[in-house]
Image 1 (tube, rainbow, N blue to C red):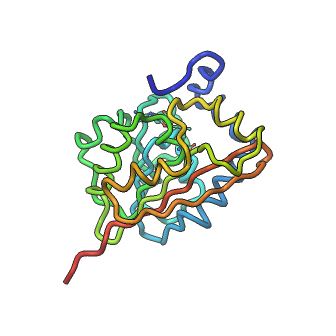
Image 2: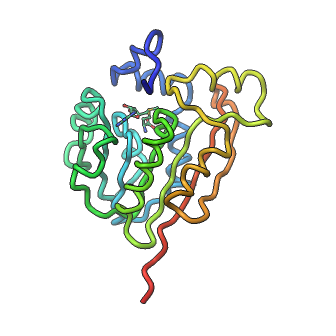
Image 3: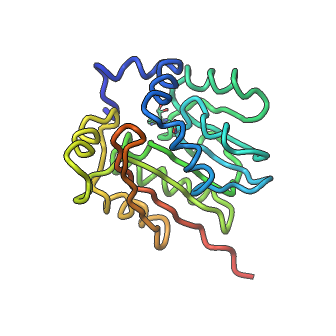
Amino acid sequence: MSERGGLWRPLENPWVYEAFHHLIGARRWLRRFATDVVRPKAGDRILDIGCGPGALLRYSNNVSYIGLDRNEAYIERGRAEFGTRGTFVCGDVADFNSFGLPRVDIAVAIGVLHHLDDELATNVLKSTYETLKPGGRLVTADPCVHPEQDALQRFVVSRDRGMHVRPFDQYAEICQSSFDNPVATYSRGYAPFPYSICILQATRPPELR
Ligand SMILES: C[S@@+](CC[C@H](N)C(=O)[O-])C[C@H]1O[C@@H](n2cnc3c(N)ncnc32)[C@H](O)[C@@H]1O
C-alpha cells in the first residue's frame, strides 16, 4: 500500500483535491516552486510524474507538457482544464517504461516519492534518468522528517496521505543510485499550513563531444 485511505480518500476526487490545495496554500507554494526551482524555459519539454490534475502546467508557459498519474479522475480533470496545452497519460509509475515517453528537458515529481516504497522510487528515478535528455534536470519535492522541524510540522508529515515519508537524507540516498550528486534542500514554513519539505535537484550529465 502506498497511500492512506480513511479521511484522505475524498482527496482522490480532483475537485476536492484542488479545493484542499487552495485551502492549505499549496497553490501559492506551487507557483513559487515553478518560478524559483523548476524554472522552465520556453520550448522545454516537461514530464510531470504523479501530476495530479496538472496544476504545475498553470505556472509553466510555452512548454511542451506531459503529465503522468494513475488516478484517472485527475487525468480527466487535467485534460478538461488544459486541453491541447498538455498531454495527460493515465498509468502507474511501476509501468513507467511502457508509456513510450519522449526524452524531456525537465522531469518533475512533486509530492510523489513519498507515495512510493524504496524499490519503486529507486526504479522510477532510474527510468526518469533514461528519459531525460543529456543535460536535463530532475526536480522533486516531498515532505520529510528533519531535526529542525517543529512539533506541528512533524505531526503533519506523520499524518501525510503518502505512506513513505522519509527522513531528509534518505531522498538523496535513493536518488544516488541513478544520478551523481543530487542536491537536497530543506524548506519549511507555514503556507499557511505547516510544511517541511525535501527538494531534490539532479542533472543528467551533458553528452561528451
Ligand atoms: C500529493 S499528490 C501530488 C500531485 C501533483 N504533483 C501536485 O503537486 O499537485 C501525489 C500524486 O501522485 C500520484 N501517484 C501516487 N502513486 C502513484 C503511482 N504509483 N503511479 C502514478 N501516480 C501515482 C497520485 O495519484 C497523486 O496524484
